[in-house]
Length: 241
Image 1 (tube, rainbow, N blue to C red):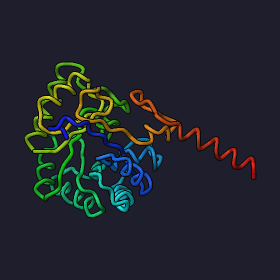
Image 2 (cartoon, one colour):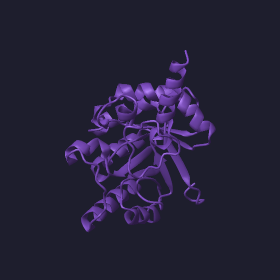
Image 3 (cartoon, one colour):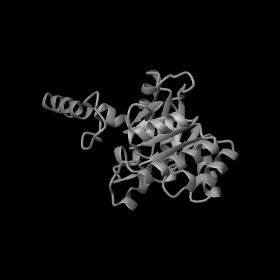
Image 4 (cartoon, rainbow, N blue to C red):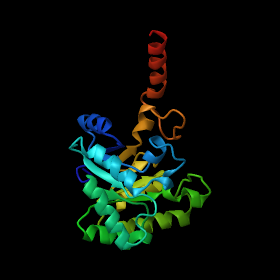
């Protein structure tokens, strides 16, 4: 799709019905993201999500038999060594994932190589890394705003390209740096809060639909207000019993 100049749409899915709906809408990439920790399981951040929880939700999505490429997130502290990374990735694949994603660049290059050597395709994730949010004081900070930040992102992108990853999520990367990475490297870039010049975009589906009304990222304009509609319809039903 990158080579053909076709825009790449990606959305998160955490259960069977949403996976079916998104696939029927023609979305080519479904990510069972560890964002499910917040929007499904009620955790304060993604660091609480376990591998078993990811397996559970991947199985649910896989039962929809989507035509879309199904990718699963490796959760926090499940890829600290190459050996652990392979075991964790194999568990997600056994649950139904066709590829896995993990956060980091050059620092996890041995893990990426081990995962791919085991025959599992790998998607990268650079920029703001949600699994590291506690290390940054609980703040989701934009990356690439100064020369050092830009150089770090380009170096990490080069490492991922060297490893042969097929795509990289760029989260909260300044648009000029996201554009530079997109133009310079062969992998597909999937942006989230990183401007319009990535090869594609990904959103948490709950954010797109307004289904998690208690928090909406600044870069998202919900297309529906599902949360408000649910409250209204349920009140109307209850009032008319």
